[in-house]
Length: 158
Image 1: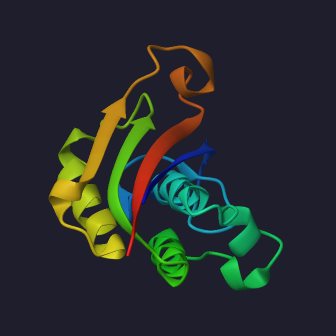
Image 2: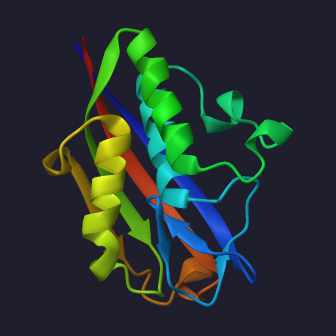
């Protein structure tokens, strides 16, 4: 049996925080607002994985109302989500992520992001795709106000 889930996340830019995407600190003038480290890549992928298993979403398992998750490493949350779906009899087989932002350019960081996500999910880098796109100047992303991420995850029965 194969299942597919889709995840989405967005965060606005703020001063005074590091920009963390896919477990990597990306040099930039602003970071992302959020209860955890605000890693929109890991959050969208976590939701895709949980959704594929019909196991709720990131807010169900790691709510921003719980102080345990304040400042949490979102790659750790991704690992926890993968463990949860394993308990339900599935394994993550593949992930595809699109990061939408105007700046900074992510191209140089994509290999490290892929490696971090693959390691968190016990996959090979060849099983994880990461693409960076701009929003052509349109909307909140286009104005440089934040980041949006879409993720698709495929699960296989173990």
